[in-house]
Length: 409
Image (cartoon, rainbow, N blue to C red):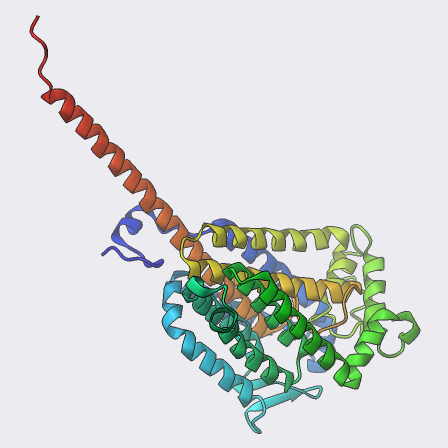
């Protein structure tokens, strides 16, 4: 009955199933907070477009319920099995990215072909590719530890797959998601032990490619210009950022009050998706933002701890990769809302409206909890072995002492 990799054993069932409640509780809090903010940020648009003030709220709630089911599954599904599935994960990721271009399967929104329709649901494959890339890189680099310092046989081969994903995602096009995948891949390679000179060389090439794509289309170039001079282009490319500034300034320290945002009244585009952080700031102020970033800080730090404690290279890189992806999304989204970075269209984890993003993020958290469970199981087994060794040593000393002859006086 004794099994490894996070599966429930007879001993574990007697002691109680370990769950990382710090991580689970924090994720639950920020997801529920996000649901409330989506309702507050979207009820005007819901009424205007669908004659239902709870339209976006209801759809996000549905995705939360679906995500909870998947979270429970992946929390108990042993992460070590992903090793065997890595090839199929890469294969189906590539197929899904190709399907978005197939007429009748792919779905276009505002000129971007990033979705497929599956059983009535709009699915964004690139969101799943984020997690698939992490699993694949963690698996390959965990096997290449013996020659990770070699460029052509160690570092480069798995990155060829990432380059393929990058090019497929750029066909949609989606530079923000493609860039985030490349950055996370580089960070995983760094944690794998790749040489700095290799990482610097690859990073330079990646930076050049991203810069090239950023200037290759007029609308991307306009985003860069609008981000640098938003007030001079307030009526066009700078509109979204200027309205975000107004929302943040209106909120101040304590906010205007839940539901009292003015910018969501069709002033701020994408108020319930990419720019929901601006609505949080307007309605709940810096205190609301403090809650959001505190939750994200706890999740990220907890993930780093889980990764550092994992004795398995695959599990460790898997945990780090999930943390890196989460951190990059927070950085890109918060940077865009605050004007520190160009607008990329990357949603804020757990809070922004969107089913695919939420589902993949929650699944990632389930995997992270599973790695934490494996760490705890290994820790328990080590403690039990130490106790057994101590008992054996004590018993040996006791039997040795009894066997000695006492001197006759």
